Amino acid sequence: MDFTIITALFEQKTTMEFMRLGIVYAHLIACCVAIGMVLSSDFAMIKELFKGGKSHLQDSQHMESLQKSVSAALAVLWVSGIAIIWLDINANGLSYLLNPKLQAKITIVMLLTFNGMLLHGLVLPALQKAGSLLELNFSMRLFALFAGALSGVSWFYAAMLGVGRPLSWKYSLTEILAAYPVMIVGGFVAMVLLTQWAKKREANQVGELALATVPRNPALAGA
Image (cartoon, rainbow, N blue to C red; front, side, top):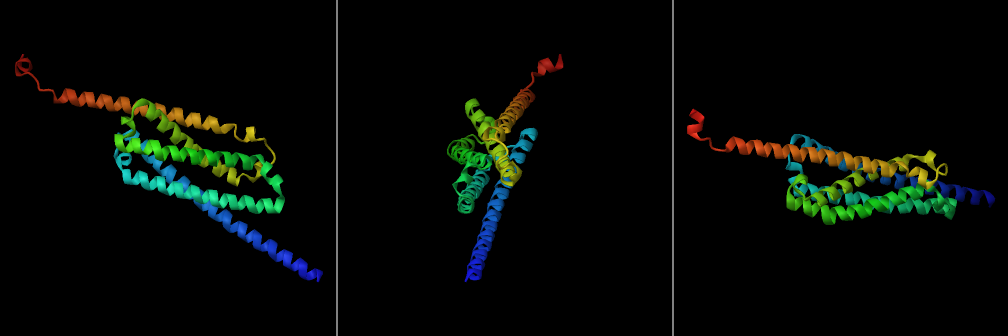
């Protein structure tokens, strides 16, 4: 009888481990998909700022598709993450929620969710109306750049925490998140400088084009 109970408990534990493995795998895939799409979009935007193109920013269908895909990936992250936490609480008790690494990851994912709502509700419509990041008014452009920096840094930071098992219980929440705001501010400042440079270059190009198209006075030309 005892052997039967032990066997049943072992089979139950094995089932739970495989279930957790499958959920973690789905969690990882969703994170990879979101990071890949955000990274490719950011690279395309930076490339266009350097070259002066606007096609990527003017493609409203692409922007909407990107936002929907990232939102879907974020939803999968929430569902799979909650499932993982539930399994770990069953295995380790409620004390598992006191893990600073887990708290840091939940905090970042919450910020990502709120930031995604702002991007979808404010930034995307403004970009579609303006047609270009450089055509946004100054305050909206700064907001868009900050939201973009927050999004990019958050996805990579959350991924790092996801694979950072050595961080569990070894550092406080403050220590784990110490580099997070620094990276956001650094990314934001870098993008502000880049957009200011691109806007200045665009203004110079417009000025040169205007001078080139001004009709010359024949009398002055022959003097």
